[in-house]
Structures are given as C-alpha cells and as structure tokens.
Image (cartoon, rainbow, N blue to C red; front, side, top):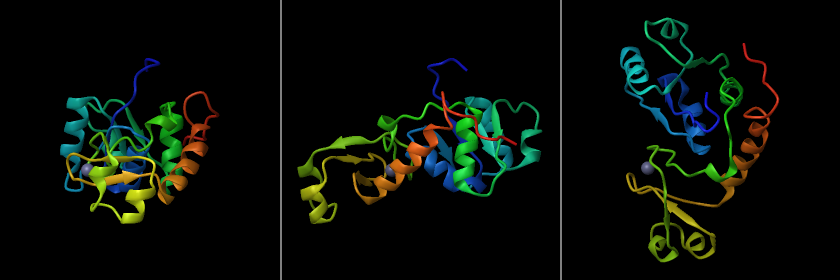
Length: 168
Ligand SMILES: [Zn+2]
C-alpha cells in the first residue's frame, strides 16, 4: 500500500458494528443490510474497496482481492485486527467526519442553523455542529465523543507505526 493511500471498505452484513466504528474513524465504509454474498463480492471487485468479512467461503471466491477475514465476534477486536492488518493511519482529525448512518461526509453547520433541530441546551452550549446532507442527522461534541476518543487513542497503537496486534 502506498503511504498516502487511505483504504475504503465494503463490509459484510454480519459486521454492522465494525462498519459503524470505521465510519466513526472517518473511513469511507459501505455497509448494506440487504445484500447477498454475490453482490458483496461484485461490489468489492468493481470498486477495489477492501472486503471485510467473517465468511471463509467468501474470501475463496474467484477474483477476491484485498480483504481481511475477521476472526473475532467482538467489535473491538475486529477493529484492532483491521487496524493492524492494514496498518491503518488513524487520525483524530478524521474522527466523526462522516455520517454514521449513511457514510456521507459531514458539513459544518452554523449555530443558528441547528436551533429547533437539536435540544436547546445543546444548541446553546456545544462548540461545533456538523450535519449530514443526506439524512439530516446533526452531530456535535458530547458524551458519545468522549467514548469515541478513548477507543481512538487505544486503536492508534494498533494502526500505522504502532505495535502489531496478534492477527490470526
Ligand atoms: Zn446521514
């Protein structure tokens, strides 16, 4: 992998939480609940997105390229495995730059744009707001963010330049 290349993903239906966390980290991640294996592999082949799956049979399909065969049931271990396997470059500034529901890059919103759309105490107090132009969801720095930052800090040690997680 070239040093500046940021991987993009297509994730199988069993790995919803992993997909969500990759979006938290700002990675372009396709995840569709209604998708069969054939469609998944076809998407992977035509787009070159890294295939993430738990299904051994799937990675044996003809034409499967770069993939990670996920070994754990636990989303935290899954995320560590992906970070280590691909030497992911995990950066704080990329965190929460994408909608967790639809993967679309978020846009910065002005405070006056969010009044009436988020709780009043949030509209008055949060430092910054970002919105999804597709589903309309609004994101701001709050309690969820703290938990995400803890996960990101820990993960950094498994990604690019960090120690290697045991990869089965
Ligand atoms: Zn959205």
